[in-house]
Length: 289
Ligand code: AMP
Image 1 (tube, helix red, strand yellow):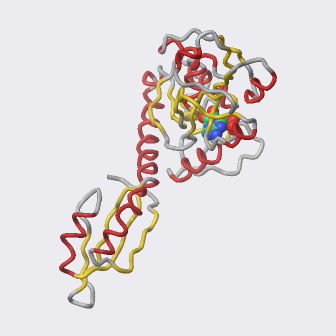
Image 2 (cartoon, rainbow, N blue to C red):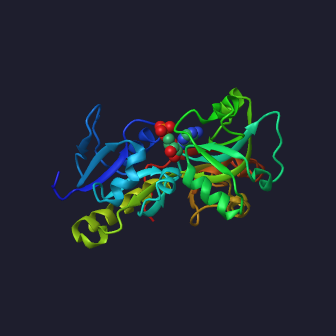
Image 3 (cartoon, rainbow, N blue to C red):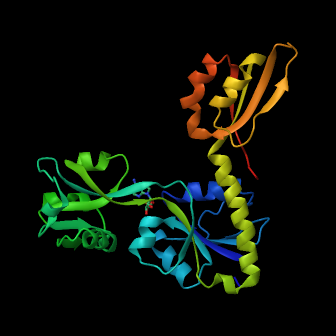
């Protein structure tokens, strides 16, 4: 293991695993099928992958067992690990929220004073309660927190929510948000002192950034009458000036532009009204600015 490679810890099996590997592969890293192995080296890059339980990743990065890691911010903050977050990765998004039985009401946070709240995130919840000057009792539970009100061990829960389906199944409803989380890239604070690894990290970040940018952008192509160019330009939220290409029909042009992926459906009708036809939206493999 002491081969000088940058050591990246990722979740062994879980919600973040597939997307993390996808991100690494789209950054050009050759990562083979790993099945049950705990450590593998990238085929074409100075990087070793350590597959670990996500609860352990912040501490392993803090202690230098791994140099960098990909893990949810919820775990990073809950573990109070002394690591640096260097990138938010845009996936694994979820919220830690308060929830209560459907039959009850919670109108403001002060009503939590003196109440019992079950959670697997006691540190994040405590920070939230302190910030809001609430004195509630935290009941720490390691799993199936949703069942706590039914069992009578707590009045409220504080748990991760994305669709809310699990809450509904347990006759609970979501209330105030406590913490927002997404997958993040963390780094050991002393890594800067290892020049060789620090250099690999800089190159790795460059690749990750271009892959993240590409993922959030799309390549838009359309044909339009020549005289529509100004109005089309004013509609496009493009990074740079669009590419304009003449067509065989001298009155027509093709316009190409890179746009933020989520903007497409907002501008599509305006483009059509401005005369755009044959609109194509393509994924971008990589983007270096
Ligand atoms: P897992 O242990 O496989 O469930 O993965 C848990 C991690 O995925 C959490 O620490 C969060 O960072 C993230 N995550 C994203 N969405 C959710 C969700 N709806 N419920 C739980 N965890 C989620």
